[in-house]
Length: 143
Image (cartoon, rainbow, N blue to C red):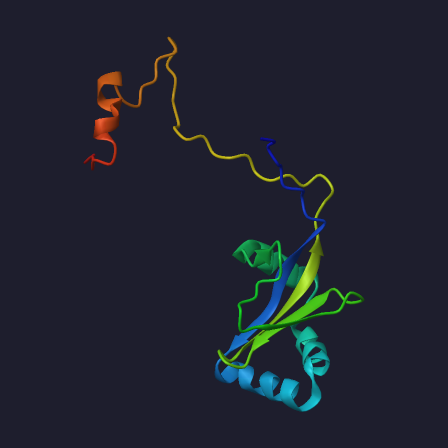
């Protein structure tokens, strides 16, 4: 009945470091011996501030929520900007950092479903009307 608009997040999560397999063994052992807090502090050495943020933004390692699967353990301390996720079953460890979102952040507008180029007379030049019938949808066109 009412259309709900998502509220923009106050912050997002960026990936600081992700280790898996043999690369994660040392940190998983550290978690087992000394606890996740010690492992989280150890992994913070790979956070290089703005450089880490730029790399995450450039490579798309930015999340609205902490990414975690059903077998993951997630440790988040409200007093810290960091969250640690790990899975002993799948042998990986991930450290994420909270990234504040600018107050003027807005989701990108939805793309137009059909791009159109208009001529001077307002005609759509992509395809003649007779070729846009629904029975033609999904057919391959060779250019």
